[in-house]
Image 1 (tube, one colour):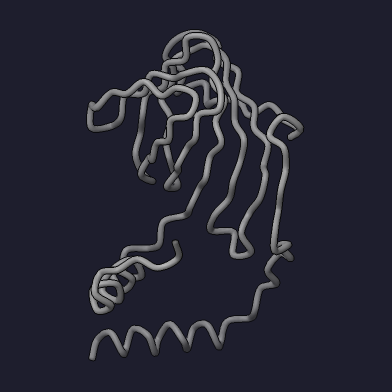
Image 2 (cartoon, one colour):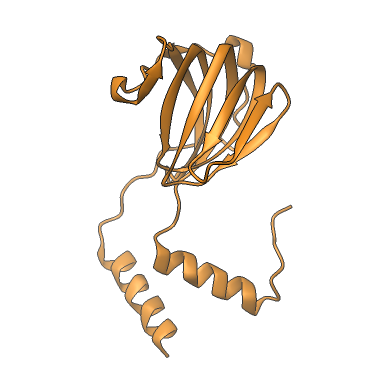
Length: 163
């Protein structure tokens, strides 16, 4: 019963709330990473531990609901702490980075490596020369909605759909 009430409340809010125009996103967005226009994306000076890391970023795409995006990011030598406000999956394209996660685990990520960083966590990045990554970002659902998704998946037998 509480789940039905929650769904009813969510539906009511969705119907009563004025509709925001979502951005018009094409069905397919493509780009060559070497041709994206990287622009300065300074690291918060309070997060820098050592050196003078210079970061740049280029947005590739964003979902209509603005809950996920894809970007190209690179950075020069330095050590800094980084806060992951969103869930982020990275694919290292060039160079390498020594990562110490919030839980103390350490990894060296090199070209071809894939890593996931949970939203709401910190990590320390140490770049000896240069690193370039593709980042896939997803805004985490609020906990009540995430719980509903987990419940739905459990009721469906725990299977994943999509791939």
